[in-house]
Image (cartoon, rainbow over all chains, first blue to last red; front, side, top):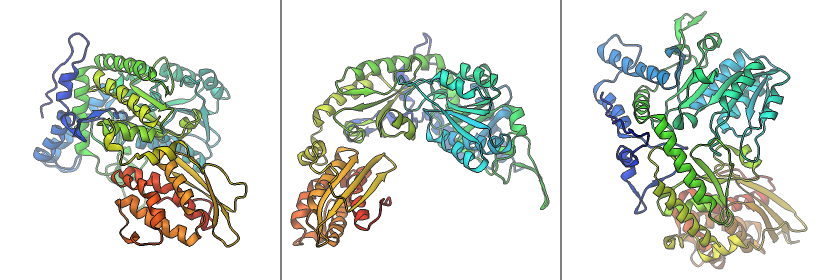
Length: 418
Length: 155
């Protein structure tokens, strides 16, 4: 399988026009207008290499993995396991066995809540999250609290949309927090959390740290060894890969101590009716036939992102975000949520004259796709006194002109509702 | 720029969305129910005061939502006042059909002619499947209140 990604940068700048050619869907029109896709934070579009990798797998080398003693199964297993190496390299994991395949970051967090939460944390210990979490990093800890007797603590955020570090540290002070589970980049505010500082504080107080990296790994280089964190959750479909495949990275000694999550085939070493022994990590956590084709597609996506390079991606998106903040804040009646110092390409906003859904419907009529709603972060919405916002989010294929189209159209939307 | 959206956002909808006439709680409330759309965060609470004969004397609401849901709540309130609970329920069935399909085949020559004409501007939502719930949400709350329930069940 040849991944024909051209190295795109020589000056550290990324050639958006060439990148856009790699994404077939960007040639589509919506309601007669060119698609302006500003909803990548919900799910990103897929480059040709990902589509081809998945199709070629099904057409030329597909069988179940880790089972058949036959050529097709061995070839498929090699390709599938190659994704583990690619992901380990992407996030600088020291050991490929620390890469656990899951469906998405929701499953990764649920795995930790179940296996580390029930298996290692003791009733009375606390899990500390932040006030800007996605529901996927709230509900599993609430379920753990109700089933296991752990406490759920929430570190507040400031009006600027940043973690309140003094409050965060105070919540760690009594030493009861066994795990800090926190986003690395907010899907609503675009805020990056100060990951290194969070880990230092948490470890100093005896707590492990899980980062929800669903957004962050799309936009900036993640190095789990430099972060010194304990768990890192990633979903493939936001990283230009397919749906149905994600990764939990965790320190090997933790994975080895943790009991399994789901039971079934693949995760066992031996089974009788009296007892079973578990497979080595990571397979202990990978019950059942995995998302083989999707994993192979994810490897192509990782290769694609690496060929472009995080430096170029981060520079491109920082320029877009600055432009978007400047254009949108110049529109009368637009309120942008959060103004964090360290932020990425996600901008949530409300318009004084129109509800977010009406805004989204009008933008859609011009071919502009944004998300409107609570973004699976209701407590965060309420923190800002809102029920919903519109959200524009950017990816490697987003252009300055698309942001101009959004801003120009928003001005007209406001006129429409005034 | 948005000329083709005038079927959805007719002037009467923009007007009722901007300046609803019934967005208040009556002094006397005999029944009330909440409705919410967990997919988008829209919320509405409908208040009813009954006349001695059991018909709906007054309708008010408190809502957070889009122009479509506010306008729909307001037009609903206007339409059901003075009607019996049975008529209000029948009207909801006809309106729901209209919101989903754009027409109401059984409504011709019906006693609801005038009422449905008033609700007609909302029929544009049928072309926007994700917005149909915005228009029907207040009606679900109304029907729940009529049944003496406190909350409407989601569709």
